[in-house]
Length: 552
View 1 (cartoon, rainbow, N blue to C red):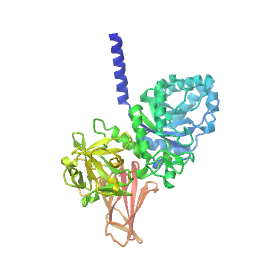
View 2: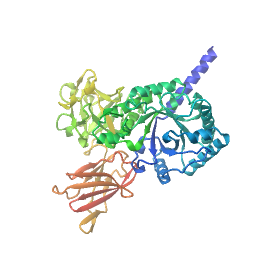
View 3: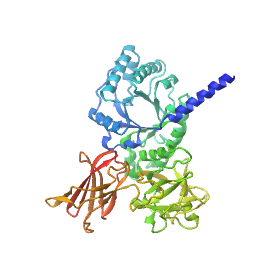
View 4: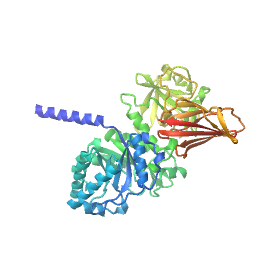
């Protein structure tokens, strides 16, 4: 009995160690027919599945659609330390005849496996994702195991990954013996019905179903939809029609907004090993991005220890009124009533010591004022009143508890913010979004610029070209710019009567960010721009200034 207990203890230790070493996966599908390689937020992903490659019934492969896109995706993703897999199969109008035919014949299975090895090597891929979602019961279920066994050996012998996609619940035809063959499975916890197709309840049912079947949590990746039903509109399209990013229903369409996405990501942290997205091109941009919402949870949950806060990041905070918290430039009491965010609505999260954090806005610290008067953002140093406990709530929101042990309240945007609540309700809960990295995260440091800002002074040194001027020398601090950071721009010889236009261009001269400004000093928001080389072009008063910018 003692020997058996000792063996069980060792097994549990191994399992816990393996789980602790498994990085949280964020897997995004990129279809061949939708989405741009240049707009992917690579820093927020670990894997990308290119969809779809289709098999023939004799183990051959149909021509891949848009191969140049796949090649570009692989090179760009690898430059950003993101793995790329080829996804084979998919819905395909419910036609699984290719899989059914090849899996039932040993020769055809071998043909298919050899073709997959060659395809992976040809495109320098990191593995294969099998989306044979609905093998029939009986012989077909056993043929699935035979195919995955042979493919698992071939992929793993080359150091490649083998993954698969499963329906959320009811996948009885995928036998439990398949779990040992893959690196992980993604659960398509959506399309359950025509309206409430992907509720949080269905996500928990899907997770419980597969864990109950014996799937290790370290191999379970929870699928999240970036679209609504029954109209099949993308999340971005729904927002464009007036849907709220913080709701799940609009005009009789069911979708997942930011709070549900965050709650599901927390569920995956607690009971699985990652999340999967169908599909990346359906996301919105900026503060409403669902991928950014996922990343907020990843950053918070991956921090370790008792402090889940995204220390070293620059964030925005939104109350349950869907408006942004503003530091008010430190001149008046803080509010939660901004429809959009600028420099005053961005906060650096710094380590306050002893499990607490400090928030800094415009080089000044946020103060709770000990709950005796409205909060301010005007302190030059961080003492007790300027330190907070970051509380991660189960619904994906966060709360802030001040040193007086009371919670910060948005006051629903109707009055200045306070830190005087004994419990955390809706007004004391906030959604946050990471918009950049802190530049200089020492808590005692203060600068004259907004945090996470790279100062780029547009030089007046120029060469005249007709009625325009192209700048030839800029000073940049820092340049390269940290990924996710903003760029602070100062226009030389500013004329208040002349508008300012700023454009961040890719190396191929594609406009990625465009802004119209009415000030000589402003920030270019580059939070969603991936690492690479870019050109910042600023037009003002009949002149054009250009600066090469590197984002790391």
